[in-house]
Image 1: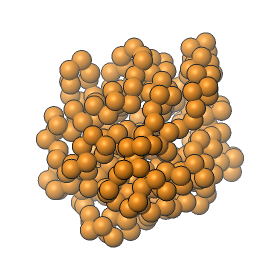
Image 2: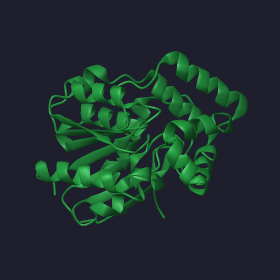
Image 3: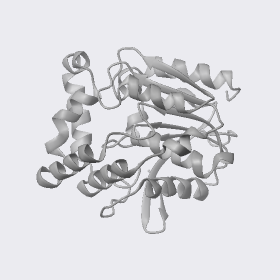
Image 4: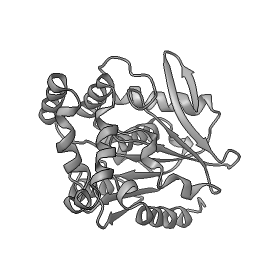
Length: 264
């Protein structure tokens, strides 16, 4: 188990392949931990150092009381990278993880070689929707949102074929600390990277599952349209977490992008 104390936060992380020049950093979605990437991240061992971590309020990392901001999540990851002595990075984030990596690319563009933005946007949802979900979680815990979340994360066909696995992802979601879940929803509610992301001048791969119920393809395409040097891919038969339901297809797209930009 790898962990580090950063200020008043204890961060849990997993790092492999130390010695490569560039580190591929994975940032998780709301309600998941670093295990989100278990089917994808090992494919890049040998080409990158690979860093996965539990953002604040998730997994084994500290869960301070809310509110949280996108800047809190951004600074946590920057502090982790600094503490580990990591310089050159490629950032890959899903959902709120995608917002976190956008915020890092805004703050430290010279550090970032490329972005992989999965099932995310420059702004996700609206204030009324997030306030409604925050109130539901306060009243009924994470459990109150669990079934609806599974429907947004995974296609009906995937849920039907993989009932036992869906239970595992549901377990991960409902075991997220309530403070971390509500705090990160507050960060999502308040985050808007539209102006900053629209000014990016770096390679960006923007991908979305064809059946994503949280950030549908039309929403994610708008993100790709913001970034001049981007390419957009729809992952067929995938939902909001293509690293789970279509890791092989996502790996293929990422590998082609990395080779195109001479990153591997």
